[in-house]
Length: 348
Ligand SMILES: [Fe+2]
Ligand SMILES: [Fe+2]
Image (cartoon, rainbow, N blue to C red; front, side, top):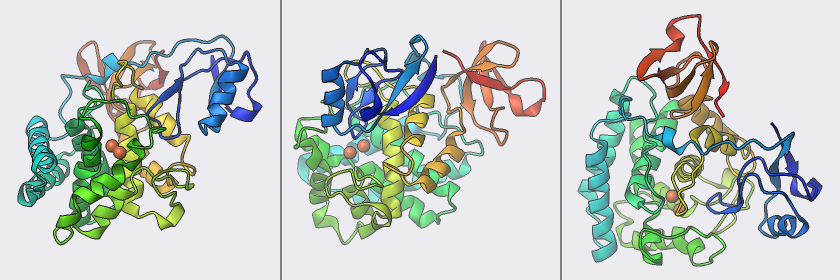
């Protein structure tokens, strides 16, 4: 099956979707992969602001969401003490939500720990793709922090700015907690949900002396798009801060690879593809490109075919893009250390 991206206005009834189609923010599946398009369906996509859709050329072949591959328990951790960091993040955010008190010193300790741990990690392993259901805000915010710090390191940001982007990541969705708890569908057509960046900033308003404006601004702008189609303000291009543009990429990747309430999620590979397809529209291409340097073209957790016909799961990228570190039959192999084996494509 070949996947062709078409403008919604050019798609015809009878054509079949090759992949899930999400609403403007990427949080809500509007039509599932394999759906045969019809007039009302196409109209729905137009009304919901979808501009491009993936359609099949040839017969539709289901590409499994590969959620089982997100769990790679034997792989080295990207950072030490992941569970402790999630616990600390949950204590900070719970206290902030319940009492309005921000334990700033504790926040600094956690953000320092994330930055230091990533600096110590020699391998660029993005093994944070735990199988958690969307709505478990704490793991999401920690994952976003880790990805954001990795992108900022790729761009040689100062340690100070890495700590700030980590702070912004841990606090960016705090406003969601005021919209019905931690588990709910992120329906971005729901105007209440669209207010959560503002609610997050309002929650932090009495701490503006401690939290730099760059952090507050990126929290406010984390659902904006590079082309101005995001929310809450529709800011675009260079008017968005660089912190915001990193946060948009890392937030999208963790959200897409996290199970939604129906248990569906995108594989890391498809989430990366989803983001790459929106470079220049939703996302600043500079930061998408830095993100690809972090993940490799086959991100951690992707099922791949090797040149000898066997299958493996990617653990981490290497400098040789087609020769990542993989796990095959519970054996970890660094393909870049030899010349005889490489990735030929993703396993369907
Ligand atoms: Fe958000
Ligand atoms: Fe988020």
